[in-house]
Image (cartoon, rainbow, N blue to C red; front, side, top):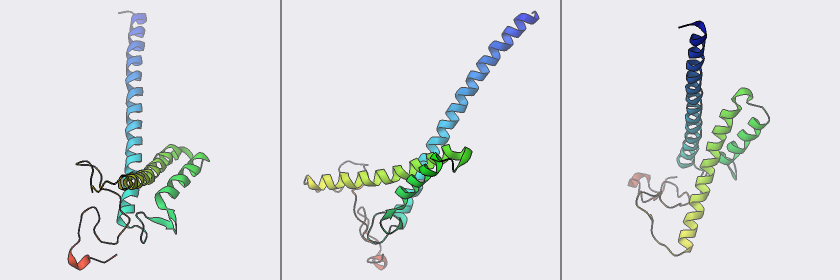
Length: 155
């Protein structure tokens, strides 16, 4: 094998390796993005369920300001104006998850209201679907769960 054919073989091999490397980098980036968005959506949804404001279904930064909405918008503003420098893409992903949490909560609430307005009394329309939206009722009956007697009325 002469030097010219060896050089061609090297170039071809290097091209194939580079193409696979680029695909792998893209795949890992998409996986990281999906993890950041869904992970932050989960965490904000958990916070909404775990420590909602009094008589609300969500956590609030201050009176009337949902945490997931505020952090989502603020995170995008900071990232758009370069406040996160080279990590702006990650801040956008985390902010997308916060906004997804807010959007899912709003969609669930509106869908439940529409269902009730249409006259449906079903608690859960489809097996395996999310339970219907109910406003925060302390530690009372949420999604069909009744707490132990010593915890009823607490909240």
